[in-house]
Structure formats: structure tokens, C-alpha cells
Image 1: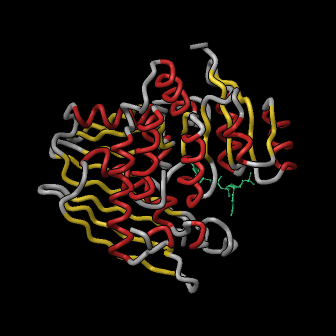
Image 2 (image 1 turned 60 degrees about the horizontal axis):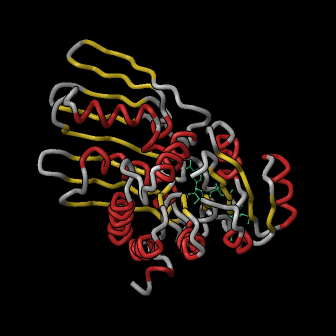
Length: 329
Ligand SMILES: NC(=O)c1ccc[n+]([C@@H]2O[C@H](COP(=O)([O-])OP(=O)(O)OC[C@H]3O[C@@H](n4cnc5c(N)ncnc54)[C@H](OP(=O)(O)O)[C@@H]3O)[C@@H](O)[C@H]2O)c1
């Protein structure tokens, strides 16, 4: 395989711009083409980020023989159908979180990737960031002993957003849970696995969109207190308590570079700088996998993505968040 990897980006919104900037920092990455529902937006994006080709139709990207891997950066409800189309065309896929609306969609994506023998990964960038790698490594090594409590939230004031926009519109998979609730649930899952019991409660706006949710994951000797909200600003630090000490992941914890360990009276601060905005690390993981003919990441496997969305399904069931995609389940 050549040492260059030709990327296509689909859905040219906010995250696509950040991703394209970080792509320039990854050795061997080439932004071959971008695709939007608007030719004008595609042209402007291609000009800004120096993509070789700009498509005004998503389908054209799947058919471009020069593209090796497609980054799906569209709204939640389109992740599965667009990933399936790209996989069907034989393209490797890096799909934004949540990988699908529900476990049924994620299972279909996994099955097609397997049948076609093409790479698929959820763009769960936090998993690959240097500080998070250290959190996982050092906790597994027992730095703060067996875990007793995890506290993580993700909240931002977006209740005044356009109700037809992706965050508040139910038909686009709106609500706090699938957009940002996935992060605290991810942290508990990463450190503790699947819980024995889940408790959850939610509030909804006048349009019936879930705006905030509190979740408790219960394990035999540990509890995780998780929260997501679109209703107010929040200091986003995460706390992890063990038998021997505690860890604070400094705000904003899901993209943090700073860890603070407290063992007895001793506090140790550690810094783990990210490359670029932080998306470099997930892109490097995709390159590592493609260059080694791997069909999935070992760090954030397809089983991990499935486990995560199954947890989200269970939480949504408990609080009563239903999308049209669930009806066939
Ligand atoms: N990893 C992260 O840090 C991170 C951060 C933010 C968001 N995300 C994820 O990335 C995805 C995109 O988020 P974003 O903030 O970039 O959203 P955004 O700015 O609204 O962009 C989404 C893009 O999807 C396309 N789209 C297709 N149909 C649409 C519709 N009916 N309504 C709105 N957009 C539609 C549009 O692309 P075209 O106009 O080009 O067709 C739009 O620009 C989400 O799934 C989100 O969960 C990840």
C-alpha cells in the first residue's frame, strides 16, 4: 500500500472543518474529495481546505475510485445509511458518533463491513487522546486502586438553538443523550464496562425533545453518576475515585490534556498534550489500521461501539426517548 491515504469528507458542517484542519497534520493524509448536499458549500470547503475535488452530491463521493476512506460528518440519523452506502462501494469508513441511532443500525453497519472486508470505526476521538490513553493505562495499573465512583457530565447551553436544527429536532436524532450523553457513558464503559443496573431520568422541551438526563450505572462495588444536558453551561471536569486515591480530569474532560492524581495528601499534576485540536489521534489510528490491513481498531473496536449504543438504547428506553428508527426494532 502507498504511504498516502486518500480521504473523502461527507457532510461539511462544523466538525468537518475541524477535522479537515487536523487532517493536514497527519503524515500521509490527503484530502482527495469533499461532498455536500450543496455544490456551493462543497466548492467553498474544498477551496478552504485544499481538497482536490468538490462534489455537490454525497453519492459522487462513494463512486470516486481515488477515495480510500470516507469520514462521515453528517447528522446522527444519516450516519448509518451513509456509512452503509460507502461500505457497499468498498470504501473504508470513519463515522462520527453516535455510530448509529440504535444498536440495530450499528449491527447492520458491522455486518456489511465484515461482508465487504472493509474497515469501519466510530470517530470516538476522546478514546485516542493522549490523556485518555493514560487514564485507562494508569487506572488499569492500579494507581488509585479498585474504582468506587465515577462522576462525569457533559452539558452546554443550547436550549435556544433553532428547534429545526440537529440538536433539538427529533427527526434528526436530537436531544442531549446521543449528542453529548455518549461521552460520560463512554467514560464509565471504558473504565468499568457494562453495568449490572441502570437508573435514569430525563426532562423534555415542549417539542418532546429530551433536554437533560441523569443516569446512574450500578456495578457490584462501584457507581457511576453520569449527566448530559443542553440546558445550561457547566464546568466539565470528571472525577474518578478509587480505594487508594482519586483522579480529576481537568475541564473540558472529554478533550483534556491535564490529569490530577491525589493519593493521600499528595497531588501530582500531569500534562499530555494533544496534536492539533485532538482529531489527529483518531486519524492516525485509522492510518495505522489501514496500513496494517486491519478491519477495525483494537483501541475502539466495533464491539465497543455496539456496547456503547446498546447502553444508550437502554437509557433511552428508561427515559422514553424514541426515534422513528426504533420503530422497526
Ligand atoms: N467528535 C466531535 O468532537 C464532534 C463534535 C461535534 C459534532 N460531532 C458529530 O458530528 C456530526 C455533525 O455535527 P456538526 O456539529 O458538524 O453538525 P452541523 O454543523 O450541523 O453539520 C452537519 C452537516 O450534515 C449535513 N446535513 C445533511 N442533512 C442535514 C440536515 N437535515 N440538517 C442539517 N445538516 C444536514 C450538512 O452537510 P452539507 O451541508 O455539507 O450537506 C451539515 O453541514 C454529529 O453527528 C455530531 O454528533 C462530533
